[in-house]
Image (cartoon, rainbow, N blue to C red; front, top):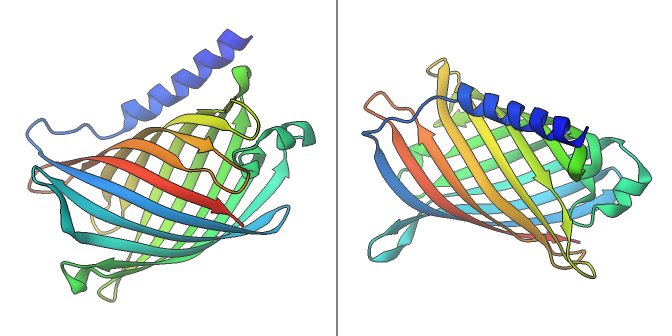
Length: 242
């Protein structure tokens, strides 16, 4: 039974990767660093606020550039729905909301484009993420996200489905590791097509109940009319629960 569930999980992940737009061999490659600071404020057992800051930094041969390309400032409300079970809920030291069947998120984000003020963006988001527990203590989640965007006062929207598989490994005391892999697609109303594919492989680390950083590698493919742009990035997220 465990083998069958694992095979099904891998088949779903493989299908998502196959449906993603293929990268162009002749595309430009950009290297970036994606630092992020997230502060969660729990309101009750089923709801919490998230305050986030996430700049994008270009990396060149000479090292990290002094300028930052853009910065995302966000405030979100998370609501977890339908807990799977108290035993599993207590087991999830890294993030109890992972153990919900459904998570709903809504929020407002402002993206400051340092190089071009005309690209500054206001964004309202809405997400619904169903989850399913698999054999071998793995969790499969399928996040559905909508971005309502105003760039230079021009409205557009994006749909961003993301498939993710993760598993929590307890180390000692409060410490645990949660390795994961995900594939995300971007549908943009401006071009009425799939314009971006984003893959991530990384791990969350539960150091203390109130602190759980993440580190990951990201591979992003932007499909532009002049040719694909490929971005390889290292992401480091500092996540605090207060």
